[in-house]
Length: 411
Image (cartoon, rainbow, N blue to C red; front, top):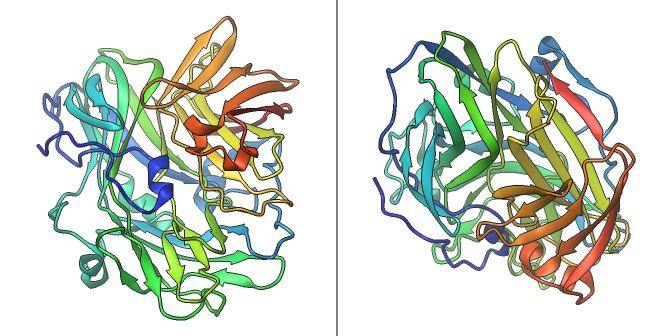
C-alpha cells in the first residue's frame, strides 16, 4: 500500500478541485466473502440533454432538461463537451471505513473491489507511458458505449455490512479530444510536450487552429473518495446489486485566454488554454430491483458563473439520502475570466431541514440549501469553494438563487 499523501502542489489550479489520494490496494478487504452479486455499469448522460444508446435500452427518463449551454460574449471564454475522454482506471471500491487526512486517504477497511486493473506502476506511469500504451484494455473512453461492456462484470463478493465510502483510483495521464465553441472561432485540443514539474501540456502553435486532436494531460493525482450521507446497508442475503457510475460530460471542458493555469496551453502571446478536469464519476450502489435518481439544481447570481449540483439518491428511499454529488461550474453570457470547477464536495450535512456541502476539512462550501420543489436561495463561500474571491467580484461569499430541480431516473 502506498503511504498517505497530501494534495500535490501544481500550477494547474483545476487540480485543487479534486481529491488527492494514494492509488493503492485497500487493507482489510472482504473479497470472496458473501453471496451477493454486483454489476458495474457506466451511465453517460449525453451533452444534448438526452442519453447514451445504452441508457435508452435501460430506459432513462428525464422530467426536465438541464441548463442550456451559453457562449460568453467576450469571444475568449467558452465550454465544450469532449468527443473522447479516456482514463486508465485502476480500481473501484466500496468500503465500510477509511482514514482521511485532508483530501488524502489511507487504511481503507471492509472493502469490496468492484473493478481492478493495476498492471502498471502508478508513480512511473507518465504521459510518455500513456502515449506508448498499446494495451486496448487499459484506457476506457467514457464517451464510448463500448466502455460499459468493459466495466460491466459480476462480482460475487459483496459482504453484508454498512458501507460508508466509495473510492475510485486511476493513473494520472488522461487522453482527451474536444472542441470549445467561442463567440468567434473555437479552441481545439492538441498534443504537445508535458512539463513534468507542473503537468501542463504545452502546444506549439495556436489552440485556435483545428481540427481537434488527442491531447495527453498528466494530472497531478489519481484518486477520489466520497462519504455517503448515511450508510448503505447490505443485508445478509443473496440479492443482486448494481454500481451505477454516472458521468455527465456536459460543458466539462473550459477554455480561455491568458490561461497560465490551464491543463493545455498554446504558445501564442494570448496564451490560450483548455482546462481538463479530474475524473468525476458518481458511483451509486443499489439493488438491481431499485433505481438511482439524479436531482439537478442550478444556482445562479454572480455575473461570472453559475453552479450545477447533481445529487444522487435511491428511488426506494423516501428520505432521499445523498449517495453522490457532482458539483460543476457553468459559464454565463458575461463570463470574462477563467473560472475553473469548484472544489469537490466530500461531505454533506443536514441540520434544521437544510443541507450543507462541505469540503475535505468539513468546512462549509454552500449553506442554506433546501431540497425544495419551488427553489430558494443559498450562500456560497467563494474562497472555500472556488479557492478565490475573483469570480465573486472580491466578495468572501455571495447569495445565489435556484429554481425547482430536474429529476432523472436511471432504470
